[in-house]
Image (cartoon, rainbow, N blue to C red; front, top):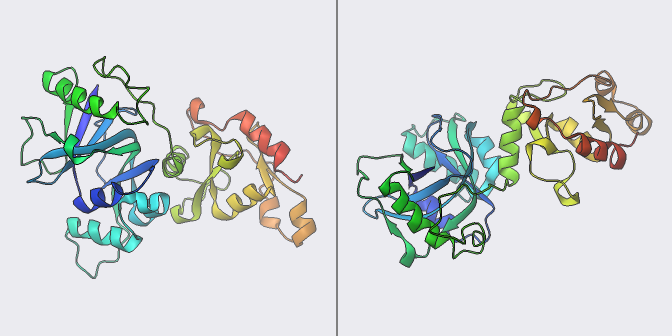
Length: 303
């Protein structure tokens, strides 16, 4: 099992450590380089900039991708470690050494972490001896090695004292284990966006700012933040889906309610899509859940 120790923006850390009960955070990187160092459930740890060479917290790695900076803000808001989109962009632009006149919506790396935790200062952990001051991004440690195992034991001992991890890490000196990530709203949005190849499931629209991740069964009504409870929809279709004017059948057919015509004397563009099969992910495990679709047909769709 691997652990990553990543150099952490001080302002990001100072803001988020004061936020109560965070479900998830976006540990952004100024560049959009791929991140493949961890698998879901492994630990991503925060190290402050030198001269404070200590590990101060971490989170459960869930997913990584690249997004335009503006969309990363929309997905995670203050969980990006900034108080506004402008503050976030300015901080990243400084790392990228951009000219002040640059207004591009550049892509950034997003490392999405659930169940983030921030250690009390007395519990901060010195970095392993192999850590080099030349590291500017992150270093991967393997718990199969003595140094990686020592780091795991130190962090697991501290995590076991936190209510979030008390049960999972009750045997703090046991075999290193994956911690099941619990997706939050932001992670759900990013994951659904990617598994639908950044295209609307109904229209194939690819203008990313116009697309939204829809819950098939609403989160507040028994739904979950999981890929199988999601559809990537163009914003107007998402609104109609939530309001019950359109639905998707368990056979993945798009249906439009007669109520659009009756109530608004309009909707020809939507009726042109009626009966079409939606685009679905290649992986069977990520396709819309038939039970959730049936629930939407029965409890939301106006018919």
